[in-house]
Structures are given as structure tokens and as C-alpha cells.
Amino acid sequence: MRELAVVDLTKRFGRVRALAGVSFKVRGGEYVAVTGPAGAGKTKLLKVIAGLLEPDSGDVLVDGQSVLGLAPEERNFSYMPSGQSLFPHMTVYDNVAYGPRARGLSEGEVAERVRRALELVGLWHRRSSLPHELSGGMRQRVALARALA
Image (cartoon, rainbow, N blue to C red; front, side, top):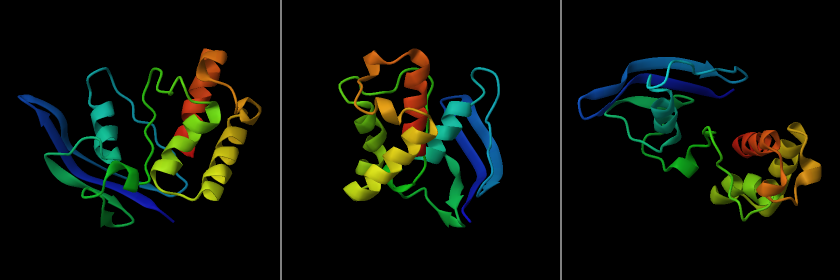
């Protein structure tokens, strides 16, 4: 069972404190929603966990081991930003396969993860489509599949 622990994270941008002592745990199988008003630090928190930003202090642990020294692709954490985040020149399949390939998984494992994720969001049949050929809701589901893969 995997566990994510965020321990006393702080992050400042000049005089603005984006994160101030944020701590929580998420155990395997749990779902968590990060909510709050605009500017509350939700995106900054997720970017620190994903390795896209370094915290000023605190730690991010997976199964008790710090991941702060790991590159984003080594953290096995997905982040789905709002807005359009798909590569327009890549098929649905290749958009979803992007993360697993970047992590160095075998093509067999990539194919299995992509199939599973696209079936979960009901878009396996659109795997050869380009993003502009999809509705807005379908594009969001592709982004979700990419985060899950």
C-alpha cells in the first residue's frame, strides 16, 4: 500500500507566502480533493509534490522516503492542470503514452497503461484521433487518462 505524506511544506515568492506549513497524508486507495479560493496555493502545492517547484522547507514522502531529490518523471505522480494541456500534434494514444514513455517504461507496459486509462475514461475507440477532433469534454477525459497512465 502506497502512502503520500506532505510534511510542513512552505513556499514563498518574494513576500508572498504561497504555502505555510502544509501537512497531510494520503493512503493507498484514498481520493483527495484540494480545494480553496483562487490564490490559496492549490496549484503551488501540487507542483511541489510533482517536483515542478522546490519548497523552501518541508518534505514530500512516498512510503516514508523523501522524493524531493528526484526528478519529476521519477516521482510517479501525475498532475492535471486546468485548461488545455494536450499536445495538439499528437494522437490521443500518444498524449496518454507521453508520461509512461518519459518514465522509461517498456512499450508493452506503456501500451497496457494507455489501454487501461483510455478504457476507464471511455475513449479507447478515439485513440487515433487528434485533440482538435474531440469535444472539450473528451479532451478533458484524455487529460485525465494521461494523469492516470
